[in-house]
Length: 174
Image (cartoon, rainbow, N blue to C red):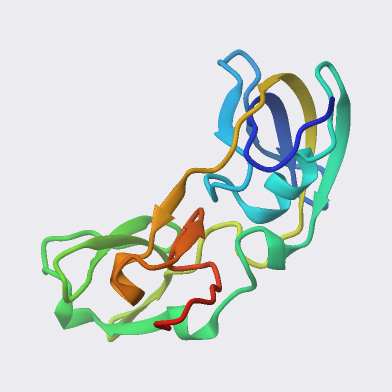
């Protein structure tokens, strides 16, 4: 049998960029565990393990669109220098937290600094990059995705697979 959607898998992996630079690896750690189809890892990685068998090894090549997406120019912004506390040291290349209106913070990379403004990039560091994973299937167990009632959209008269907000569905009430 081979891995299919709903199965729980354990894989070892090494992720590299187009130039061969490694950006992540499970080497020396426990294998990565996730349920296929539950949106716990990037889509291309999830798709890539489907059909693998225990002990199998393969390379999964993922274009940026199926990884962390392309760079979004709207997530690169200039912030007036006077909006940053005067005692906070800010340098190009550093990461900083950016406050959102709801009180949450997201990470941003400082890409440029001058006396008047700071340029920050809130894109994921791997956005716009093609990713390559060498993967070894350590083990998997057969499973299925939990069905959830869709109370928010139709009072629970239909059932959704996986993530309610991301799956299209049809029911009498919707």
